[in-house]
Image (cartoon, rainbow, N blue to C red; front, side, top):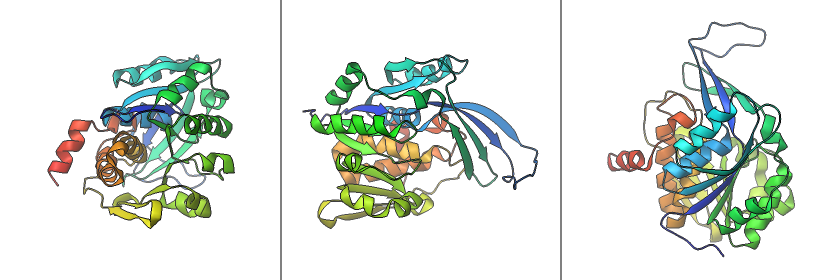
Length: 292
């Protein structure tokens, strides 16, 4: 069984994409063409973003995922290694890497279209993948890779005493086997409403509510809430991933502290453009909390 540590070992199984970010004063209506105000290519993907967030927030992270054999692959690998994330289980598959097309309006709100690419081909776990999961304190997953792969990882984690933290996004109905193996679920308010009773079977449920902060329901009916830091919002892309990764890094200190830590990380992520490029460090989170 994995032991707790001041620097928790975190295995992140998930997606990695190149985000193609366009900024515009407002998002277009159907059939409408607008002039944009900017464009950037920023490495992203929920799995990669959360891995970087967990590493920067104090974890020791190994990333399990896939890139293609295209021009984006090298940069996607580099953004993980530059953040200190372990990539020995980042595999290369034939074809394109995943991409996300993101439009950010003048108010910082976004719309996102994800094309899975290599992420959709992450259909099985190797013995080395399973060993990393078994040795970790926390397995962190999302749903931008095949659901069967997530279910298999969660089952193996549960069998080896590894805490399973699931961010069920993009939201979809979850199989009973996966629900039975999840210890902590992190959802936004829309996802919470859609999943409904499914969340009742999970011991710890964290609901992010944007500028209204975060709520938590734990065993025995425990209820907690955490307000959001007040910041100047530039772009909300990746804020939820920054929150979730930081929550994983701080979970060993208990839900109350983890919520505080993660809420600060999520708020700070909205103050910069992009996903992985906006994720705060442990020092930045500490400074923000000291100032509030």
